Image 1 (tube, rainbow, N blue to C red):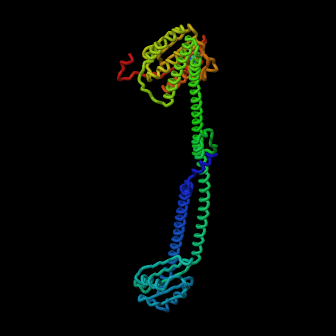
Image 2: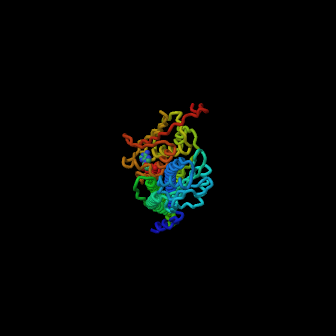
Image 3: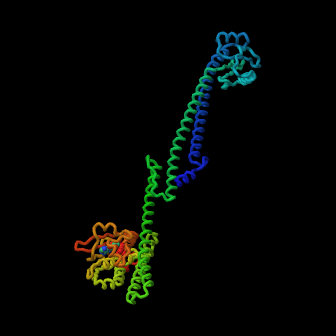
Length: 486
Ligand code: ADP
């Protein structure tokens, strides 16, 4: 439990958390987007309304302009008559001026939110021959005016301006604006809530993985993440679980190895201690017996040395220290091993026959080949009957160099076969110990074979005894030094 609380203590601060940062980023993006959409939408609808206002005012101005142009001149009386006939009541104001700017006609003055000075300025520009349209959205309404010149006989006889205030269209625009704003608020709120929920859920899962990593780091190798869903985090969790399983396996193997190795070293040490104590405590021990005890001490010491040497070899293999490899003739290594083991074979009256084909080259180091040939042939002698036979074959076919060691010895029971390559595994403990074995020889062979990309198999011979077969990938002759294979 202490480890869980430690994991929780490591939680990231609020402002450093990915959730806070991603939420802030998301919310900022949504806010900017909604603002842009709202602004664009409202500006576009306002411009559309301005355009429709301009069209409608221009149409009406053209009717008035045509009527006024039909007069032979503009005077207060005839202009009033024209406007009486036209009944232009919908406008906030209508003003007609002569070329000097003198007012000839002015209708009632409703509030159109356009100042008199602006109207005067527009009329001046109309007298100069230009149509002037003006519109603005103010006080919840559209205030628009149009000022046009009145032409009689090709001469500017005056100008008129009419203005209006349209609060109906204004209400439509305000309605649109309100609806767009309300919709934006709803979208923003939903987005924020959804973002926070999704990010929170994601962070909870990431935190679970982080907690699990801390737990495993603290040594709780059996801890697993509960895997749900089918996304990247699910994959990460199951990869983590697989990794933890492998770690757990390695750790268990390591612990087992240390326990076995200590036991293996402890046994001969205890024997040495016992034998030396016996010699020391027994003053009257006959010399012959003392010699026997000292010989036993020597044997135990040799066994210790052999076991230590094998442990060192295994550690080297475990640490993947790549030895100096080159193109090696396996027959050479076998012959050298046979020379070394011949005295042991003679001691047991074991007859060794070998058929070693030439040109069986593999890519390996001298030590690696020695590990394989020495352990297999030594076992064939150690676990043979006195006067037994050993057959060694080496041949090359289809790119495979096959090395076989057969013996007529005690053999290995079928149920033990799957375990013989395990570290410290012995089929017959007493016999192995007697033969000076440590249960590490075949484990070294297996690790070496794996390192070389080769393959090893063990089978019981029908006639009794064992057959060990190693298949190496053949190392073809280097084209630059082709003569070597001959
Ligand atoms: P050891 O150092 O005890 O010989 P190994 O790893 O070389 O350890 O072999 C493991 C066990 O497999 C041995 O203890 C022995 O019981 C059995 N074994 C290995 N080779 C043979 C063989 N050729 N015939 C019978 N038993 C064998």
